[in-house]
Image (tube, rainbow, N blue to C red; front, side, top):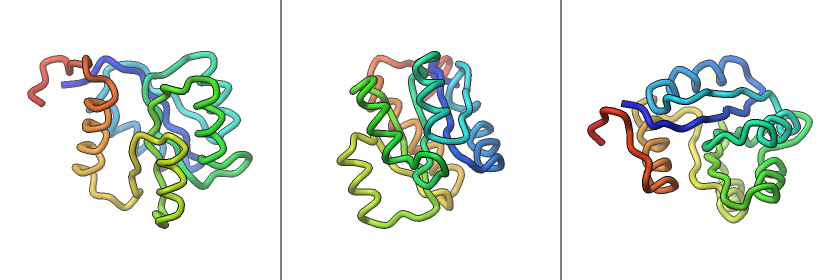
Length: 135
């Protein structure tokens, strides 16, 4: 029951990346890449071109909003879900204005995170079909 997509998780917290990898393995069948900050994410994106990115807002070196802007300069159609522990209205608005496909708070319950990711995939990749999935 997984979409044939490749994903990348960008977060400076090892535990958060591990948690999101576990969730994504239930949703996507392709490779899941990891980056610790925006600079690593941009480098890895240029090389690997993953279909979907989960991008933390608050990171050292380069924050998520600047990373999102740079990714969109590389590929205006990049699909990015912003993730954060602080969902202040201005940050959410800035992320959406910058082209984020969706937004997830880190304290969102697991089943809801999975649903948000699935909804984003279905909205962003209308021809994506989950292998053996009943969506």
